[in-house]
Length: 339
Image (cartoon, rainbow, N blue to C red; front, side):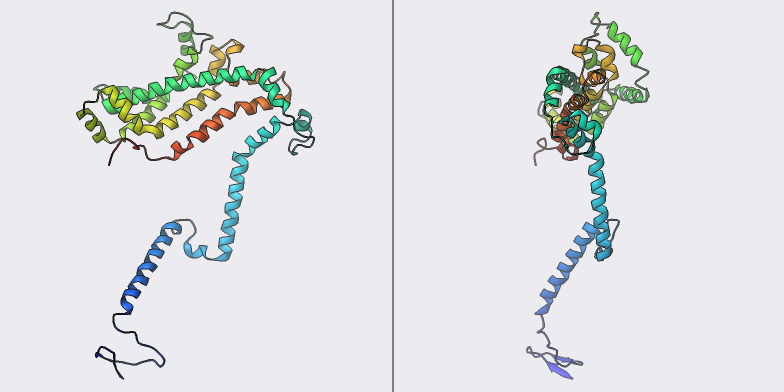
């Protein structure tokens, strides 16, 4: 059968009864748009869900979707139980009477709360003094570690002296030496320092200065500085920047992520350090929480002692929450490169 369209063109072929023929050229743009939208949706769906362990086709199955959703919820609950459960339990024990902790440890305040545990731990057990000692030790150790790590990484990665590779190899080699092997020589050095000439026992410097000898932090800084764009350093030198100005105004602003990571590592390591502060800080009035809490455990009420433990965990938790963005951040060049 021959059909003539409105434009005068003739078309031959079978025509299905009841079918309407579109004018030529009217459906092409709409069809192309539909094809493009379908391709974009398919590409987006493949990008979002096609790379998982369950394909998009299987995910449309109601049974598989319900099973995977339940599995995700169970895994999330287990992670919360393992990660946050002990912290919440310690916070509960900190305001629970001692008899309730002993008799019904998992009951939710069967006989009410006892906020006096916190005040007694802070004042009567003198946790406030040990808490302040811990903050001073952590702050000093953080400063020394950051000073050594940033300057060492800057010299080895940016300045690159002729002997830099030898020093870098020696720094990496110290990572293979167990810290226990260095304990006795380090203690003898603190007893009779070569430059100071006076024993550093019962002095915060005995904890601050050795903490700077962290090869791990130097290696971290060096590797991060190696990834920074050398063009920025060359442009700064062309503008007349000195080595210190290049370090302070260019390198450090570009290194915020690694500075946050090393800061958290340094602070938490100093906060939980037990053996070295116990050896060099023999005066109980100068000891941190990590040393004093085990010493007072046997002569302190259980509820008050657990309140003291809860207080000792505040700074690491707050510090990690404050710097978690730097852990996840991958943009270390903010503010250093203008586009």
